[in-house]
Image (tube, rainbow, N blue to C red; front, side, top):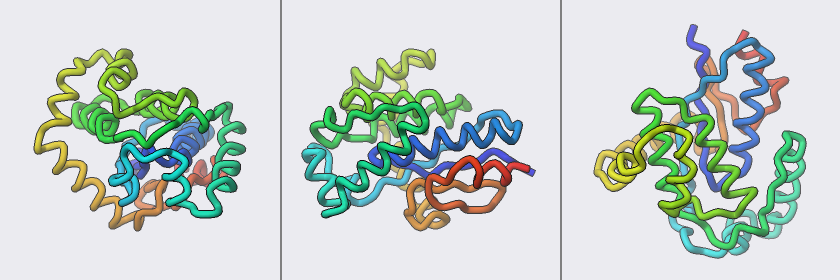
Length: 202
């Protein structure tokens, strides 16, 4: 039975980072090597809010619950040893360059876990613009890949088609509840705790 999980995520949702960390803990508890396939699925707002102030983005997404949401995810991130600095994020970045890198790494049979975590850290702990070529090139420096290959893929028709196909697929099995997992054919909605996830690898 295939135990390699799939994680539906988007970089503009910090719960995705919580999900990544919790999955790693769960797989370690289950004695499984950390191996995950990332499938991006951006919300309509995420696709159209590039350049919007981050505060306005949160207000449009969560309304009067924005501060409560941020407080909740901050608490869960801190439990995992992450110290977010949301105040450093000034505007909504274009996540497509980072997503192109994730898809390129996976299509070339390279693990994307470390890169994904570096992207989350750059955005939520440092407030860096993950849509900037220089930032993505820096975050890819440990992957021993040529940034020009990622850039070429980003600008190609195949990237747009692959991203759309992936997002459509995720919408089919996760119903756009992001993050969500698919483990051994079972869908698990939300950034569930290791206690929930680990038994699914038995």
